[in-house]
Structure formats: C-alpha cells, structure tokens
Image (cartoon, rainbow, N blue to C red; front, side):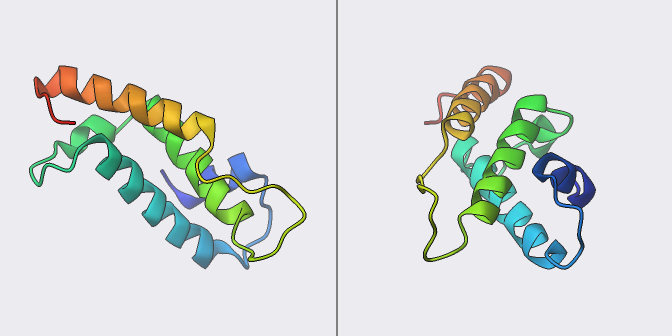
Length: 103
C-alpha cells in the first residue's frame, strides 16, 4: 500500500500528517503480517495484490491515526472488527496456500 491510497481511504487531503501516517502504515503492515505468520521465512508475495490484506492495512492505519490522542470524546477500541476478521481470513488463506499448520 502507498500513502496516497491510505489518505484517500481516510479522506485526508493535507500533507502535514504524512510522516505520522507513513509510520502508522509501517506499523500496520508489520502487525498484520506478524498476525498471519511469524515464520522468519514467511512468503511476502502472499500479501501483494491481496485485497483482504489491503483492507486490513487501511483499517488499522485509520484506527492508529484516529486514536492517537490520549484524551478524546470518541470511544476507543483495542481492535476494530474489520481488522480482526481480515487477519483471521488471511491467516487461514496463508495456511492453506503454504500448507502449514502454523498458529
């Protein structure tokens, strides 16, 4: 995923948060990939052009971005349902594709 795609989904039209959004993007990609497989020889190609992975990344970056304040008037959640659902689907698909029983 790239910054412009993430910002379109988040409806962010300004540039002054690009650095922090890029940081959240790195965090989200690592978090999702590590939730699918922690194998040091993980097949990274599984994640390319994977719409479920892309959805999870967008949702998690948005979550990080919108919940970055210590105090807010919005309720905060540990993990939004869409990310959890996507990770579970990705994990199962990865296991099937790689013929692994990794948990």
